[in-house]
Image 1 (cartoon, each protein chain N blue to C red):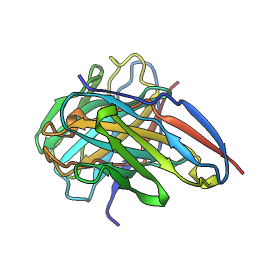
Image 2: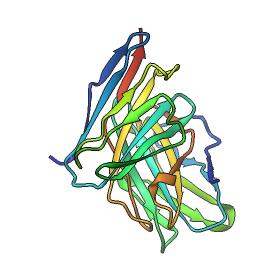
Image 3: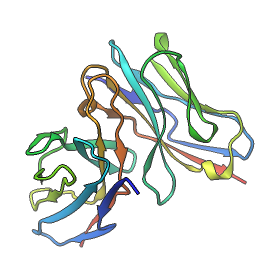
Image 4: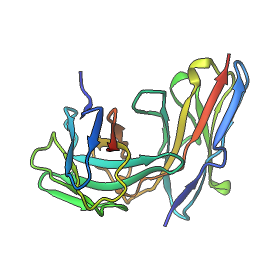
Length: 115
Length: 114
């Protein structure tokens, strides 16, 4: 069975700092990878996704993620965070060819940005 | 506006009571999903449906039931058999695909036990 690890449970940064949130998965086959964000009081939104092709994926609001197959990782990055990036971030993975009923989520990383 | 709506936003359940959470989508998506979100545990799949009149159990289906009589609607009933129902419930929908499927989420319903 696949699993997803987000080792950073709570990250606190100052505005303009650079961000990297870790995401590692365990599955030996081909995967689809997602980052979702949940802003306070709002619904879960898709930040970016990787299906195939260029392993560097750009998403909304200046976020990007890099798929490194050899490390089973899909870390989320942003060069300069803003106060409005305060939210909870979830990494998710599903095995390609199995559909989204096998979509597995990490436990989430709470990001707090200090003005 | 296309999207997924969930109601109510907050729901209170008494002991021994069944409650039903609503999920409606106008995205013309065939697949719909119910997740439960608990602090520090991420999202766990309760039930999913890939087509009308068909649904499958997810990882934590015990104490829950669903129906899928219409493409747009996928209500979730939390039965009295669910001993720990307090959680945030999220509904999602998608166009099913074995290769490139993306789920989109509703705003959620928070269920509290009185």
